Image (cartoon, rainbow, N blue to C red):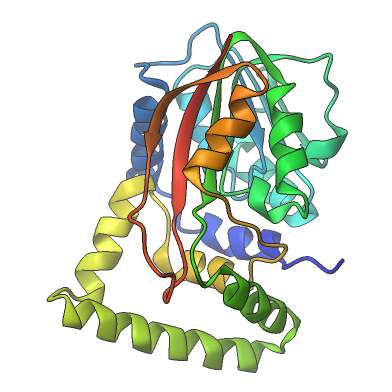
Length: 261
């Protein structure tokens, strides 16, 4: 299976990481964990991407950080972003979620927008549950299922396999329709991008590229996600849902926080 070049996208995004974006990411982790800091807590970042979430965990004083990604570019980018902290209890490794050692347990297992790109989302979720220590937190975000998910799967296959100039055309068409949709709801793209950055410190442009080409691709309903986690003795602590839509402009990620019984 040919994967989308996620690592190249996050390497490009990493050049935008500044104090503002870092603070937004820190704020997001605080919201999800309901903790002011992560002192005495170990943190596993599955699919570390640009390294931003891993950096936020370090800034929140986690006791130990283990960051993994199957993409070499993401691993190297994360090492570069965390270069000043690697003498501490920080380990960054090229590894698939499926190859994690289940003998190692973590207080917080974090995977934002990753497990639905593994090619086997359910298996990836189940593997993640095995990495959580008793009483620990599993924090994941997954694409919400929509009526048009089958269409987007086809689009992603085309996008990831196309030359750069075709990708740019597809992206321009998408952005054109997206901007029109915002105008029809009395919003504009500039304010949307600013609000987007303030949510988690991410880049709208890089996320659009990730969305259009992000294959493998799966999606799941909130009900099915809770059902899977419940079967592995996890209880839902909180869930931040995106609005239910037909899926014309794609779908967003529902954020979940589960605790292991």
